[in-house]
Amino acid sequence: MKTSLQLKMSQQLTMTPQLQQAIRLLQLSTLDLQQEIQEALESNPMLEVREDIDESAAADSKNSQSVDQKATSDAENTANSNEGDQRELEIAEHIPDDLAVDSSWDDIYTHAPTSHGLPSGDDDFNFENVYGTTDSLWDHLNWQLNLTTMTDRDRQIAESLIESVNAEGYLSSSLDDIFEGLTAHMANLDDPLEMDEVEAVLHRVQHFDPPGVCARDLADCLTIQLNQMSEDTPWREAALTVVNNYLDLLASRDYSQLMRKSKLKEPELRDVIALIQSLNPRPGNQIESGKEEYVVPDVIVRKDIKNNRWLVELNPEIAPKLRVNVSYASMVKRADSSSDNTYLKDHLQEARWFIKSLMSRNETLLKVATNIVEHQRGFLEYGEEAMKPLVLHDVAEAVEMHESTISRVTTQKYMHTPRGIFELKYFFSSHVSTDSGGEASSTAIRAIIKKLVAAENPRKPLSDAKIATLLGDKGIQVARRTIAKYREAMMIPPSNERKRLI
Image (cartoon, rainbow, N blue to C red):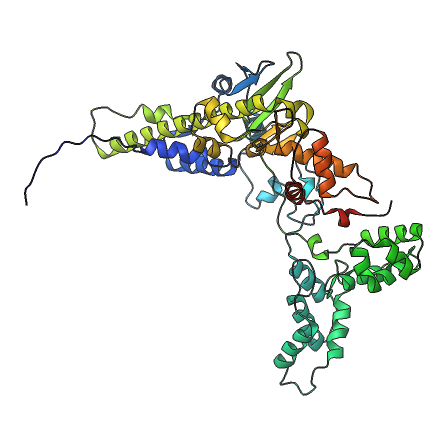
């Protein structure tokens, strides 16, 4: 075996810790970014929140761009107000320096109720959660069960029935299976369990809120709700007849057969259907747990009417402004190699990297959002039908970045526009060639389909083939199966299910 020495040249890309951090921050959502910043503030003494107005205004002036008539970018200054800080100062002024021994925090602060509560006079009370609930459907049913007078035997049956209820409010097990399980569980009792007892308890539980709960099927659910209405409700008896005997005809929208069998005329059937449609086929969905979740936009787009241009700016509320703590930074000594000085040096470097990564994230997000607005000015002006085809490669080429970077920066990032809040990925769509040699966006095609369906004759809904023909008349050639795919994506039922009486 002979040893030899060889010289070889090669290139490879090494991701530094700074680059890894920048990429990780780039793909974080607003909520995750806020958590990341909070963790950095807690772990790094060199980082602090910048609260001075002058520096915030100067930094925000770099975070705004505009799109003029020629789709060029201009700088737009923005100012960041510190209303939250002012509010905290006002609250602090009302707190006495010394509290009495028997004082409690409840005497100083007034707390809003957590659920089912009413406002107590606080101007900052969140009225959206006044009637909110944190209970699940099963907790809600068990709460009513505890308020109902029952024997221990019937209560055990009711608990088994409630355990079998699914999230939509229906029994997930048949009554025979529930009876067999109860019989095995209550085998040691002297008096054997009868099916009539289970049905009697089921009838009582079906009177719980929400109406229609513990039903065995859809017909049973609708029947329970109709029976709970007053007897003088118009068309109640006719609706019970249709639900119990001709629900399949109603589901298939075979109105001619339904009128013949139910002996109802068209105006009468229309009123009966309106009453049935007022019922809730999924009563369990009325009881929802948890709070409402809101989307915080990362980018705000508004129109400067005076200059007829679109302005793109970062949302100043999504993250606090950070800076290096000057007091701690001044303690770092260049030639000192002690452990304390090394600790300060390392955290100072980490703080600078973190701030630089945040600035890079904001600049990239603003640049990509501005380019998207340049491409989709038609959407902002006229709506979905004016949406243009756009893919990641188009934006990546325009901003001179890799497609993977564009994908990261558009994931879980939202843009607030005069037409609503949209994820940045919403503005990307494939294209379909037109007869004139141009291109149409798939989003625009879906908007046209929705518009055609909304304007169709309810007695004779448009089929997928007919919609394809109408699009062809507009110069857009789309296959019938593509129409069906877009329609299903928009949760528009097929033509036979859209048919209804006028």
